[in-house]
Length: 181
Image (tube, rainbow, N blue to C red; front, side):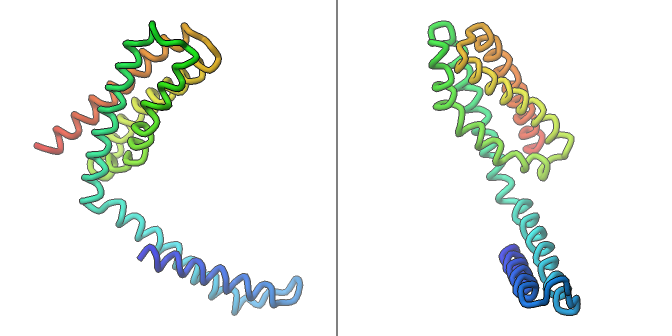
């Protein structure tokens, strides 16, 4: 359905474009242009409905939520290790450690986050994402402080990032336990 929608969007756009090029300047014969526009609108509707159905498919949702659990657990574990080593780590190398260790986990979590809203509720989604987004912002702040050589700020915000990601982890695991019962 989604692919049919994309096809109709393309056909509608192309038909409208071809018609627009073949008409006289400042003249629109709406009886040809409106059908092309409507084909495009139908395409948009079909593409959105198809995308929504794909996103809410049960197997995809459970797979995404499993990825969510794996990514948040891995991110917390890796950030705990980085935080434990912060005194012996050169502040200018900290951003490289963060890039190596955290990039895939944070991106994977963000890619699978919509499963929370589909499986639980938007309030649960907001609660998880509030903590996760704060943790991610703090990780980004540590990264920037590392680049600039601000040792104290990098160390302080490592702890804050870890605290926020642990909170997100706790909420996600609580949701998972709620879903299992």
